[in-house]
Image 1 (cartoon, helix red, strand yellow):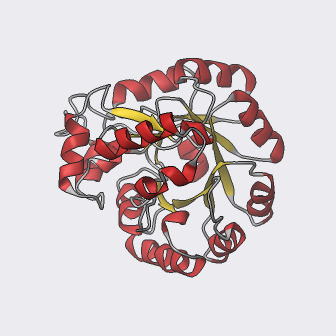
Image 2 (cartoon, rainbow, N blue to C red):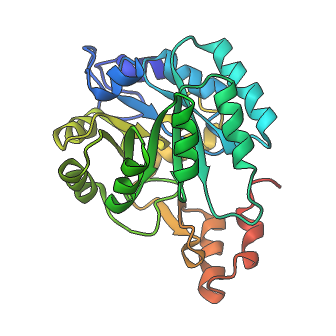
Amino acid sequence: EEIARLLTNHKRSVLHPTPLIVRMPIKTKLTEALGIEHPLIQGGMHFVGYAEMAAAVSNGGGLGTITALTQPNAEALRKEIRKCKALTKKPFAVNLTLLPVVTAPDYGSFAKVIVEEGVKIVETAGRNPKKFIKFFKENGCYVIHKCVAIRHALTAQRLGADMISMDGFECGGHPGEEDIGNWILLAQAARKLKIPFVASGGCANGAQLAAALALGAEGMNMGTRFMATKEAPIRPEIKKALVEGDERATTLVMRSVGNTERVYKNSAAEKVREIEAENPGDFMAFRHLVNTRH
């Protein structure tokens, strides 16, 4: 399948002119800790990180990830985890992102299901993870915390996280409010962290993996790159747009409400920016354009 070829083929990818990884596996602290073949993580992605996507990545030798909050409730997540178990016998993770939202999900129930279903790798992200890192560690999980600043990474390290996913401002989705790129973050992480870290944000090919490893990372986390694969559960028109897009094809929305998102630049995104400029800080003014559960 396409993801397996993406993770193992030394030839050039159909969707990207630079090969992602050579055939000879690269061993790092990431691969050794998680029991995976390649130092690549499929990041948590809303309405993309389903069981089929996670299983395809794991079967290809990387670490697939189910996105917990894509599911409407904890019991639906339980079913998704069980579906993933039926599709792969290899390790996979669940992402639990703590974000400022109008109606907060029952994070505790999601966390409980993750543990009850025997998932041993968890990616946390977003707001203060103290409670959940403690809970997952007490239940024998390996915790990778994604953050956008060294100070947050140091906090996660102190709280007991096993690994950091250092998320540069280039990333799709939530780049945080610090606006710091990976060239700075990775160099600083290598100097200041005592636990291993991976690169995240703007990662898509083998040259970037080599650069990440050279900067001290143990691998890299990719999101958008996996969206452009056959196994990704999104419309082919979106995949085509992603492949054909250039460095100017994204934009930032929701900056005025402290929940910045990097999204594809389309008419809806431009309308959100227009409304934000006129009504800064008023989420309800543009909520109808960003609501993912119509």
